[in-house]
Image (cartoon, rainbow, N blue to C red):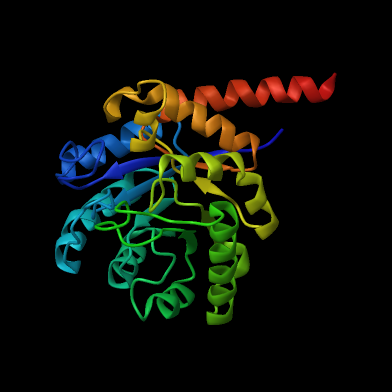
Length: 270
């Protein structure tokens, strides 16, 4: 039976697209992380800078002040791997010292000149995500000739660059970056062609949870009302080779994946 892991989202921000402001103090963020652990999360992803479309960057000090107390608080209370969702190597270094073991970088280690050397020195698992443009501008007019092949080529190149810089090949995870510089059609094409990324021989992480593109399908409403579409995207991605799912709704996603995997196992045994 194919295995999967659920990455629960803990946004310590005032402006994230779905839950901005809900958990932007240490105590509520830690409680939220513990709740996701109880619901069955395998990884907790802590972020202190929103990367929603149009988001403004925050300073290193502000980001550190948001995430470090939460990472420390969760690290001593759970045995789960903790991921730091950041573009900044300074934040990744401090997060690793506080207990993080995964660096989830939406810029695929391109944001800062010392990102690659920092990643190699830290030895963390690294999530390399594709994005066209930066969060502030990425949704203005994204263009591709073939989105699946262009995302494949970008991730293949970034893997090669990372390995050449000293990042261990078996610590690299890839993410096609659903919603990051992509239209609805681009997102659908990527999800439909996700199995193409399996040729890169790295675990595939997908984040479709509550994203805006779902609003363009079947009258999906505001972010909190997109659970059905989120789960559909997760199941389709799992079927096409993804094994890590970054989600807001841990319990519901785990249940859906467990049922789907059990059905597939029964089918294979026939």
